[in-house]
Length: 243
Image (tube, rainbow, N blue to C red):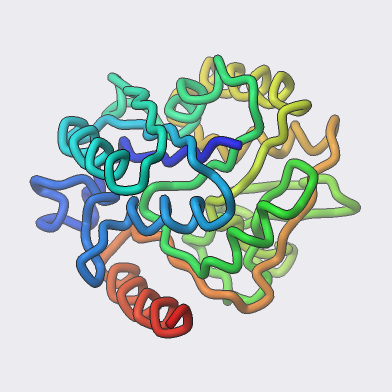
């Protein structure tokens, strides 16, 4: 299984922190966000990675070399040259279009409880991790699941009808990869600003998708300074728990 970490974004809402640094290379307790994710994946048997780069790509590539040597892992670099004018659907398709193996996919600005990764990896099917505890708001990337089928996914959904929030961590198994890429390719062609998350709605209608609920396990995607503060507090809890 391969770990794909999307690391191409500009992180404008975190400036000046991201003025000269991509978000995945920001450090919490002296460990970069991307290294923390690599470690989480490695603890679940993943030793092959793809980093999708764009914003300050040279810095991510250099850090990747450091991680390869430190952990004796494989890291392939995939560049989204149009990262400033496209979104995660394009970055994801560039990483997955030639794959022939199952993969975990995560946004590169995500910190999460290692147990969430463990619960996802041990599931046998294509799966999405959904936060069923967090109080939803207009910015939440909401998801509606009915009888295993996704009835909607995105920020504009009705909060009361939503099952929870998709946390930006998912898995696609090898046998579903062809359909995933077919849908994803169309998504990028329809609008290069689309999020990859949207392809799961159509995918859920033709393959079995499982939904791994967080059930109170904590995580945070780091979009702004409020998220940044939350993430730092969470990391301290995760590290103390692991000790």
